[in-house]
Length: 638
Image (tube, rainbow, N blue to C red; front, side):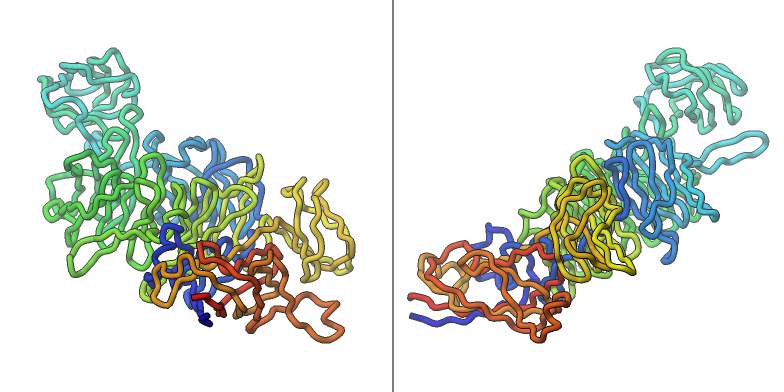
């Protein structure tokens, strides 16, 4: 009979899929766990109970959270919902922008990029908009305005144009100026063209009336060169008929538009230092650029991202646009990887230490688009290889720079949190759940906000280190009292209460109030959440699965804790609270004091090796918890 002592000093591989339970030879197995729920992972190896969610506001419905950061001091949270945008500042609602054009369904496919005090918002079915904050903190939504060139009474809008009809289709104007009739040689017009512009031999006209598919009435904006039929004509690339831009970004002092509804694989770049001027001119270095991504399949552009190079994420591949600097003559387009991005939703790529993280088209991978100096090309490694079970059709993401965590909102309402330290080779997943569904996430400054749905109601909440419950609120009173109000957002819910620093009651909110059994001067009230930690099945000294089928007896487990008030665990005989020694009569009248040190718990009974964990921590007590390491003493019947 062998006596074995094992040590687990790190959780820096995070939660690992059960598909790897037979791979004890992997280094990730040594540093991984079977389950890490509602805990965050420290780069030094430990895990701790995640912060609670502080209640910010009740909102009318679902939507999408978007950060707006004018500078480090002026940061705002935007909620795009059905027909409106709510603006929050400092955790409080500032204003509502009413009558916005986006429906709830369209918020899934919104793209945005910020320039100073303006957020440029795009959707392929909605005209692109500027959401602007002025110096008086007034918010408005306006249309994009491309540069208008005026000279000698003539005008031209320097926007992208494209010929959607076949090359041999001609148009013929009835006159060279004034109100004219434009006749096409084949069906080319629709009623939605009214208000749109055309270029005939590089001269612009505006369509004012629709007659039929081959005839429209127009007003010349520039004098035409003649009245002969010509193949040299095109219409504005973005319109009610052809759809609107899909996505945009800024790169090398140019505005980049990636794709449109009817031109999904096309890129447009503005003139240098003239962001709304897309005039191609004569191809000079500072003039606009336009080209299509042509390959063995149609690559619908899903995102454009400014990094080391201009990165283009499409439905079937990832591309690099290079050129130092980008000019019409120097530009190069090269496909790098063939992963693809989702088509039914927009999940914005995120920059993490020079790598661009994006969700794969399959919806079960998080890829890291990273330039490799040796190959002089980009690679797209999968960051979820060890935890594929966590990735379930992500719908939103945000990167918390201070905690080095990427929060990935899944379609099932959970968050997958990825702790990343590339230099230290830490890539660790854990899962965050709550009583309800998480719909969206956004980083505003150093705060991670989430949009949650609980029952039929929707709320904005924020991760807060000072809270240990979800949907939580705090209150204080100079004189102790038993009745605490202001809990309308928790009406009918069973809540947990921390009074004067100690958990005391579980109560139901009635008429926005709870009544404690004993008076208190300060309270924290909210929904309890459970954190769970389970180790991976044990392996033998040589790793792998050599322990399969043997019998063993756990003797004792020693848990190294830091700033931990409560420990509730199962070592084979059910979940039980482990007491910490606290001396002195005053200890009975004070809040539980955090414990730092080693706590040894004895275990009993023989077990047969399998996939069941040796121990399990599961607790909902709303107090601090941090686990640094675990040592296990086991007797094995060899």
